[in-house]
Length: 276
Ligand code: NAD
Image 1 (cartoon, rainbow, N blue to C red):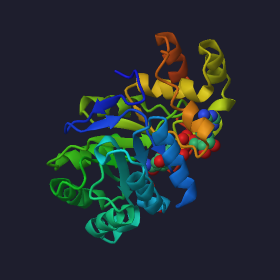
Image 2: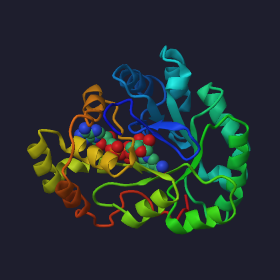
Image 3: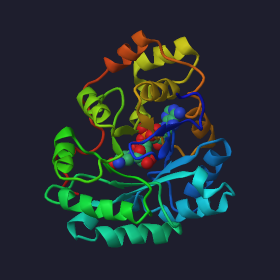
Image 4: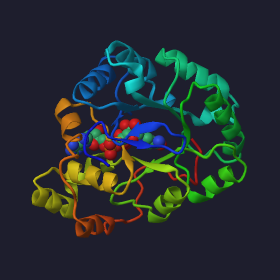
């Protein structure tokens, strides 16, 4: 399934999403984000993950429009921010994202966080956006099983993706299993534990064993779990390193070893307390 940087997974609506993408959180709008995307596309990345809250959609859009690669070969994700759910600006916020991007459509539009008392009324609007053809797939982010059950209780379209914090210190096997059973593709944010993968002795030892880097071992572990992954870097050598995950395979025992590092430890906010 995952033998090249171009490999894609088929989502529950038939859309094809690359297993590997470039995350662009904290890359500054303008030169920084554009240079990172240009480099990533040059070496074969075809998926970019942004969000309106990252304040770099304009740069992302410019890089994609200017890259010379046909639009339909690139998979672009952006996200609906929490304030826009609270202020009932969901449809307007989507238009604004498209305007900033300067594009006619996005490949995936995600509800960024499960804002309590709002996400259930947001979802039909996401479905409306999907029906318009301007988001080729819709999904959610940071949804726990309980949120997904509530949403799916009364939905026309099952989310195609759930993008959550996922790394060896936060494995969430029950959520992964639930999403698999409902054909919701899990996608890992902070897959590299924001750089901490290099500090974990078990990961470092496995990297040595496979002749790979700690980041590559952990990103490969994502793929073998059937989890789409979007490591972030603005540095060419790391963007390239993070794509070097298609030429080796972790043995089952080593997958289990990595699973065993789970501590239920979050680096980001809890999906149960969305007060931002
Ligand atoms: P990450 O785990 O991808 O870590 C990125 C950091 O790790 C870099 O800043 C760098 O310091 C380091 N790094 C990168 N490559 C490395 C390598 N090869 N070796 C060692 N260190 C390396 O963390 P992230 O940026 O938080 O997450 C990735 C992407 O996920 C984001 O850019 C964003 O697109 C998305 N995200 C989504 C949400 C959400 O709520 N949906 C939240 C956070 C991030």
